[in-house]
Length: 124
Image (tube, rainbow, N blue to C red; front, top):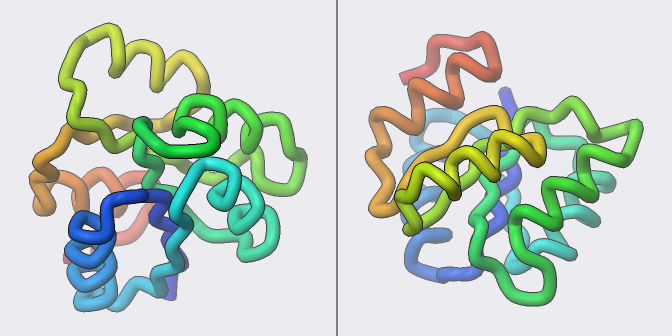
């Protein structure tokens, strides 16, 4: 079973993601802010990270940059999640090390396809 770290500060979005991912048999762990996300990534070694960009304490871009500098977790796939659908946001996310990008409101079917592609699985 693949483990996914959801780094998201909105309780509503957190709940929806956790519920839908668990329904698809993913193990899900949650961090509330970017700093906690970096710490949990190191401790839990997830298979994939869903990283909100607009986070308290440390934003998702900064958290991603930290993760990419830590040898033990630098290769974990990261999908950026953001309400900002600007091309610049997508480009910045990819430039700092995110593997993919999904805008909010989240198209869950599309997100699952991206997760499966990055994990090399075919869960639906």
